[in-house]
Each structure stands twice: as structure tokens, then as C-alpha cells.
Image (cartoon, rainbow, N blue to C red; front, side):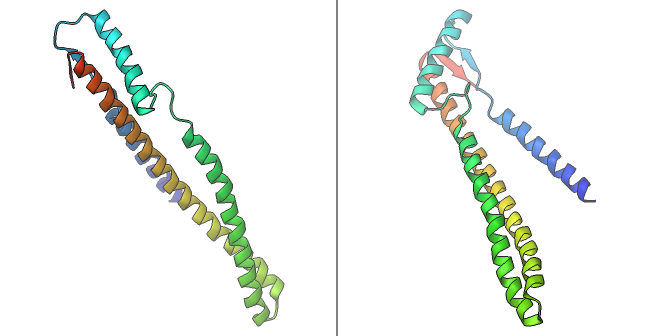
Length: 159
């Protein structure tokens, strides 16, 4: 049952990514003033450079900031498990002392705390990935708006 849920979840994510790629595709420029294909290619390159320099977004080279934040987040997520284990061990030791065996209580508490810390780490990772995707979408949207404005200024109709 759990494997089917994981597959369903993965399929939904893949569909969402495919829709995102379609939504983030480059707008199409149509020559409105009889520009040749060579002129359109030249204007496209000039507008690419202009939009890149004005927005700081380069669609040909994805931003590396997502990878850096992911690495720092992974270090923090491991800390959540360790912190959960420590809190669980302390609580388990206290309960175990009341019941007569602090060692067993601490061990059980550490296991439970590690699991809870892992759940918090996974939740934080999902939120971080959603935030990174949202920022990426916003950056590409900003770039394409700048590119479209440039191309319109050169006499193209943008769709």
C-alpha cells in the first residue's frame, strides 16, 4: 500500500514538473515588420544579452544558489535528527527513572526522538524545495518579460 502511495506521489510530481516546463517555455516572437530570419536571430541574441544583464537571470545556465542552499540544508537536517535523539533520550531517561530503568527509557526516547527529528527534517526539505522552485519560476518569468519587452521594442509580436 505504501509503495503505491509513493508511486502515485512521484507521478503527480512528474506531471507538475512537466506542466512547469511547459509554462516556463520561451515566448515566441513573430516578425511584425518583415524582419528576415537572420535579423530575428540577431535581435533574439541581443535581447537575450540585454534581458540577462538587466535581470541577472541566465536561462542557459541555471542558478547554482539552489544547490548551495540544498547542501547547507542537508547539514541542518542531520542536526534535527541528532537534536531529536538528544531530546528523546533526555525525556526517556526521566520517564525511565520513574519506571525504574533510566537506561532503557533513554534508549527508547532516543529512537523516538530520532524518528521525530527525521520527520521534521523531511518536512523542512519539502518546504525548501517548494520555495526554490517558486523562486526559479519567478526568475524565469522576470527574464521572459524583459526579453519580450526588448523584442517588442525591435518590432516583433510576442505570443
